[in-house]
Length: 277
Ligand SMILES: Cc1cc2nc3c(=O)[nH]c(=O)nc-3n(C[C@H](O)[C@H](O)[C@H](O)COP(=O)(O)OP(=O)(O)OC[C@H]3O[C@@H](n4cnc5c(N)ncnc54)[C@H](O)[C@@H]3O)c2cc1C
Ligand code: FES
Image (tube, rainbow, N blue to C red; front, top):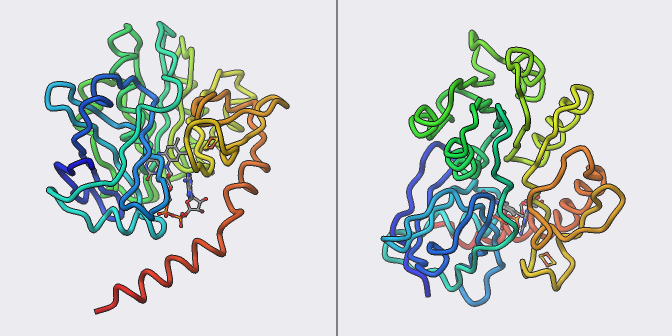
């Protein structure tokens, strides 16, 4: 059992979860994820590692409420226990001197890219954050990124905001102002990953996406997270989650992500009905 040290709402619909998991905290690297199970009968939920503290023995993730498991997670409090918190899983992100790195992040991806941003900064890169939020008040961890980034651009749909378009439309504009852009990292919803990859393809910018297919075991055994990368079958849990965005078969990924939609909606309706006062 894994004690929850903190669970709080960061902005509407996004929550921070800090769990005591000393072995995971000692081994974490940027780009990796954990699998949590709320109870013995719950599903396994993959969450990107947003931070860790090896001294405290804790791991932090930020999650978006989308269905039954994330609704349940959002009701837990400090002192409650998770049945499972397995990790770190997946291959770490490649960290090297790329010159300038553009980080494109939305939703939980703003937190998920933070460890890579910190490591890339330590490796001497110039960093630009392009954050995609529906409205300005949904931006979080701006203070953390201010300490790392040379430039922060926020694409929000607020009237009067400098970039009102979806982040993928702002990419070429942001990239045009950067002389030595060596890499783009993207994390967030699958639509953001795909749209940014399409936007950077004609610009010839190497683009690494943190892929989020449905996962079950997280250890390469079940095949649930199978995806096609450059025509080859890969398992995102062990071969990724980082992949070249220009090589991903996006239509297949979207199809596979929607495979259980009816069951997920039914499960959520049942859960919400059962939780009515
Ligand atoms: C490597 C990886 C890292 C992730 N990191 C984060 C994170 O840091 N924060 C965060 O909020 N979310 C993250 N996700 C997505 C998160 O795992 C799903 O949103 C969650 O499992 C949904 O569970 P649910 O029961 O609430 O919703 P469900 O009702 O099960 O599903 C709702 C939607 O979420 C998608 N989904 C469902 N199950 C999974 C699954 N096991 N893996 C991926 N997508 C799924 C489905 O496409 C579906 O449309 C990550 C996914 C992967 C693969
Ligand atoms: S989640 Fe089972 S193989 Fe990746």
